[in-house]
Image (cartoon, rainbow, N blue to C red):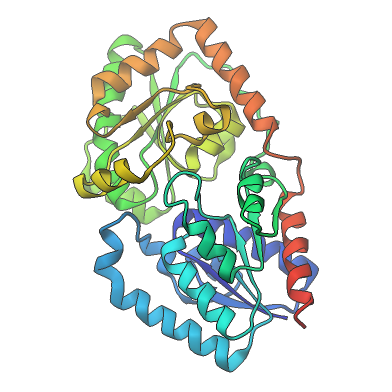
Length: 369
């Protein structure tokens, strides 16, 4: 079986890697190619590691139109000449919907795995997905009804992180408060978030003398970038790999940019202060498009503010530190937050999520063989 996969950011690269692994467990001889990142490249033939560049926002993709256009032509030619059995799209709607159109023209079934969050913004996107996608696979329970309401064949197998993140970690006893510093995986996120997070950590350290920082990074390149461009308090902050969940589970609290990390921390049971800051233009557009109250998935899933959020100009060190200390220094608030995180996590599905998703996807493609 020949399968084309497309992911456009670090999160998609991770999800792509895991679904490819599971597909190859079922079909060891499957030929898989497409667009992704360095993680997917270890398990398939990646034509462009566009996910490593991580083009996001409203303005940023405009600067990369030539690259995206070239990739679209490459995919279109591949569909016509190689006639793959199926196409798997992973989030990244702005580019992937064009791939879906090209695949549809060639009569190739498309599965959208990790569907766009149409419930948050640009709800008309679901109508475009309906035109070109044979099946949608969502990763949050409430999304299934949204897609099915529009007449789209949709499955919820659970959230992939249920398989990736063991929930059996127990915090080791320590005389230090461990503060997670998680500005995001993309350079533009790091540039916007890391300085206020580091300054907030310094403020927390003045109140809690034994505070220690934990800073997860996606790659050595990311670590080098941070060390070159930011001042880190000597001997107070430790770098770890982003997927070292054993080390991350030691965090007592985390300053976290909104995104994938909020879901990971929910499963790990780590209270958070969620922040996000972007360019003025991107924020201005997003403010008029986003139709939901919260930006952190933990709060979206709960329908309430389980973890405080600080957005744009509110993302300043004093407010971040105050929000962290309010949770850390009040046992009742802390324990109540952890309990709510556990309840939310339990709704994300049972282990075996990615295997079930792979089987469901291959079932769609096998009908085309």
